[in-house]
Picture 1 (tube, each protein chain N blue to C red):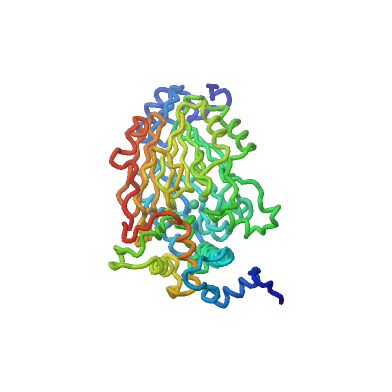
Picture 2 (cartoon, each protein chain N blue to C red):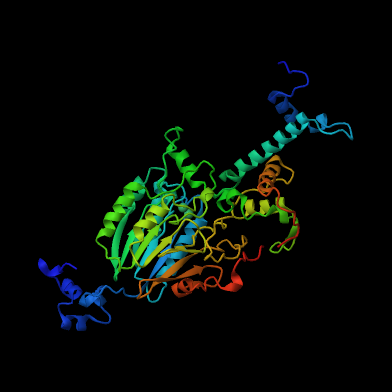
Amino acid sequence: MKIKKGILTSFSITILISLGGYAYIALAHGQPHSEQDLKLFEMAYQKAVDQGYKLFHDSKLGTTGQSCDMCHPDAANTHPETYPKYQTQIKKVITLGEMINWCIINPLKGEALPLDSEKMIALEAYITNQRKGVPLAPGKH
Amino acid sequence: MKPRHESGITRRDLLRAGAGTAAVTLMAGASPFGMVRMAFGSEKAQSFTFAYLSDAHLYVKSLNQKFVDSLVKGVQNVNDMDPPPDFVFFGGDLAQLGHPDELKLGKEILSGLKPKLHMMVGEHDWYLDMGEAWKGLFGPDRYSFDHKGIHFVVLNSVIVKDYWTPNNMTPEQRMLAMAQLDNPKGEAFSVGSEQRAWLEKDLKKVKPETPLVVFSHSPLYKLYRPWNFWTDDAEEVQKILSRFKIVTVFHGHTHQILTNRIGNITFHGFLSTAWPWPYAPTGMPKLSLQMDRPDPFFSTDGCGWGTIDMLGSGQADKTYQLWNRSPMKVTYQEIAAGTWPPAYAQGSSGPSY
Ligand SMILES: [Fe+2]
Ligand SMILES: [Fe+2]
């Protein structure tokens, strides 16, 4: 298959992403990102957000038929900007991912996701993206 | 009022029409006849209490026991009321995905209620088969009845424009789309012109002084369109109700403590037995005291049921019977006097966990 020089087609982007192409296209230090690069970053990010949206609305994360959106439409009341914070009921400081796992294990009766898994990162991307522009308030109650 | 003894006089008719003082005296007090205080032709309503259960969202039992347990608990709570309520109203969304097995399970649980039950449909009951199973189990989706001087109307307010046919959606896909509250492609709920015509006709026989209670699943006003906390033809329905002096709307769907007043109409939202919805980010009515954010570590926090005290005036006080918190009573007097919500609570959304 022919890939035009200098133009990242969606096909090549897919390959770059699936190869973990971020490092590959990372630029020499001090250089601004090209428009193409920014487009690529944005597409990779949006892909994670979209995957997160799907997982968030999918009952397969658990075993009770429920999905995250049933208590959190549009990710409301997830307040990602307040993590890490002291979670009063767990009695320690936890991250957003750990709180997501609490919800998967308890109300959804599912299996916890590894914190560095693609699915967990996607969920965090969607939830955090919903609060874009909200000032960070870690630790807030 | 047309005399009822024109043809076929019954004892009850005599009492209603006030045609027998002796009989009225005899029947006063612990009477099996609900209409006894309407003797002498008075239109004055009689005070009584009814219970409100809503939004059970049952899956089939093998999948989700928690929601089953919650509805069973609600039924038990209602049965424990002393004195018992005059009736129980169910506010819709009995099932989660409109499946006949979910609806049958719900009917089985609700059959444990000792008082009489009135049912209303929600979108989760409706969109798998367009209400066929629900209507088969519970009867018409819109109807009216009279009780102790009050006229009650039950509506199907979850009618939406057909977007499934053009998109070639299966009934299951349609149901899943309707079950997603934050579905960006969802259509707005409505009562619809056909049902509005029915409503006008139903109300024709009712005097403007008669207190009116309307049950709808969605709030009969426009709160927040993205989550269908909304009825698209709300203004048209409100206009039909504007002829009446005392109108109260009780609704489900929003799964939260919610109060509103528009003109002559007071609106009360009720709790779900299954889970609480967050408050909408915009559009909240001024009268709404937002309950503190539910604690996810208590699986029934923010959930519960309700009781409604119909006052002799025909207005209503409501009490949220929260399972993990103290009951919260909101009186009509506070709403009318503008002292609800209390100043200390205004603008507060409570602590986060
Ligand atoms: Fe509901
Ligand atoms: Fe609903």
